[in-house]
Image (cartoon, rainbow, N blue to C red; front, side, top):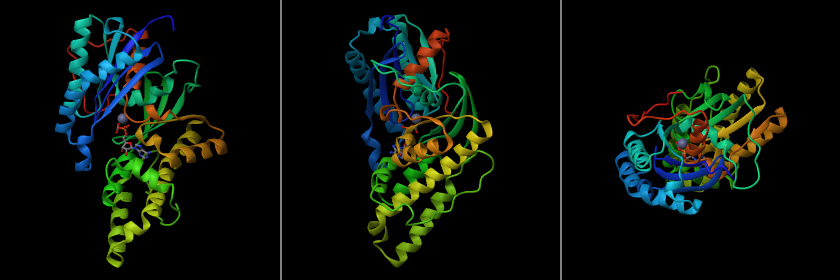
Length: 341
Ligand code: KG4
Ligand code: ZN
């Protein structure tokens, strides 16, 4: 690590405040402050998220610099999430990044949150090298707000070839968990309970959607009605079948995702396959992906757990590649709520 190209990444698009420092493409620190304040509401409350970002941002950045073992004067650029996300949340990170870039007189770089999730595959550890996907590759991006199959032609040339027409996969997990009274965010809770359950205990219909697109709202509704009917017969139905319900639901969501990903791989002839976003932490999805990779001879890339859910390392690596392209943002940059790529 001789180039000392230190880049600070700032992520504040939803309910995690995060700061990370990279040296070139090597990770030095990645600090994430989760916001507990949303738990009792069963979902992210935008007003509260903005305020928590205001509280967290300075300590999180200090910690990221301290852990990286550098001072802010050594930074060469600041990369921030411009969108998509909650506007109030994004504004905190953007305003902070702008101010710091003026104070330190270093360039500002804007990053797209969804591209960041994908580019997280290129983050190298402090020492040694990990295998990275070869262009062109397909990336299944599955998070709380998005479900997409992206054809990645180069670092910043990406084409969405399939996406959800309603709920995202993470939303399907979170809403189902809410229906069962399991807490928020529901994805990790369902994942854990599913490990003890039987995935074929209950059958839920898969949607019939055109081309490479997805739909999850029908699954949520049929899950809700199914439970309503069962609860009429047995008040303790959820309690008595929790693990089987979680395993069966998770299995259905994973099948919906992987059927379309397999179709995309067949249609494009691409065997370089990656997965990204919060739902890529799911153990059922990871196992099923490995199985399909064996079957279809894919080269599969699964991110480290730390880079699956929202983090600033993915924003810093986006910043690194933009820095190499001299692609800088100006001080009048504003956030966007919907993705621009
Ligand atoms: O990427 P992310 O941190 O934030 C967004 O950009 O949305 O994704 C959050 C989503 C939530 O819906 C959460 O329930 C889901 O990722 N998630 C999981 C798991 N861990 C996080 N879903 C299923 N299984 C998991 N282990
Ligand atoms: Zn995300």
